[in-house]
Image (cartoon, helix red, strand yellow):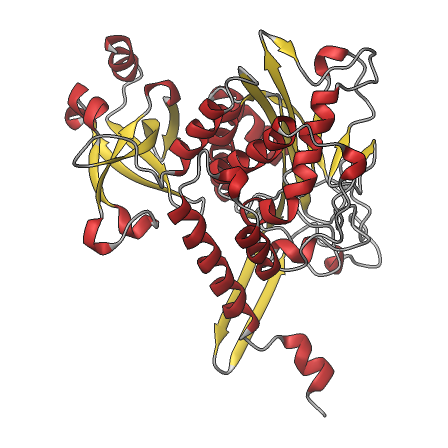
Length: 443
């Protein structure tokens, strides 16, 4: 612990930032002067009103955020070098983890599967759009959405400049790819704070980019989702851009998923690996079966926005049915075709997107797969129909199928989540859409 304080002082940090995730998956923070950041704070945390983060009611909202020493990283904010920690949420009276804290829920999920796996390794693919102008407003007499980007195909002139064509951006090279420098700067920051990046490239859509990270343990990967989004937004903002990870920001263009590659180990052995380099184990197939069987309910946590379901439509390499395939980019779960070594055997869950709370989404995903292993589910007996086409359908699926979550998710959270997601869906559906004017104004 003394080394931690020495390192903060060695780097000349005058401020310490404590970051905590709210129930929706957004980071909140409180900043302490270095003089106020003591061993007592590290052990007992800082008090806050948890009702504003979705964890509690106003009648019992006093909680504390407790820094996790293993998450220390350093970032430049303005001219200041700031020490930052990711925090857990504890009840103020007992100093025990709060049952609704998403980070603690993921920890509980991992503990509950220790008889099957020692570690779960994950590597997400981060897809996002970059704009230089974004305007939106919803009023009684006005609904506005307008975005712009220097790379937008809608700005393409007849001559004189290079542009990425519509749906033609995958792996395009500069000068068509205008954001290589931005991605290089983002990756440099990520590597500096300990996130190992596999590669980055332009994605299919105009203004759409991807960064893929290397595998790491589940809790670190979930922390990494918020760290990556934080770094991407801040680096982009300094270069005059706005970033969104929302699943479908542009009409008739590719959407943003967050495909998660994953494998489990026991005694340092990959338990998804089969007998040959291109084979997978029966345990792996049972894990996949659990994902597919529970996928409709799982999506309430992995795809928790109304916008998620605008991405999951035919024609964009996005899953619409609970299917499994080898090298199949339309499947909900696939085995990448480029894997050549048994130790790298993994599956890729392609439904999930970055609108999720990463701790809840990842915990639910793991528990669904593990339930398939516990019940030795078989792929050929998974006969699902279409995946949910709306957030309301996903919430209804969760209402019917949630027992697989209860080793880590409190029932009160599941009930609240279902109610909240149905309400979000109804709120969006109640607002007239501009295309309805196009279709029906003259009826």
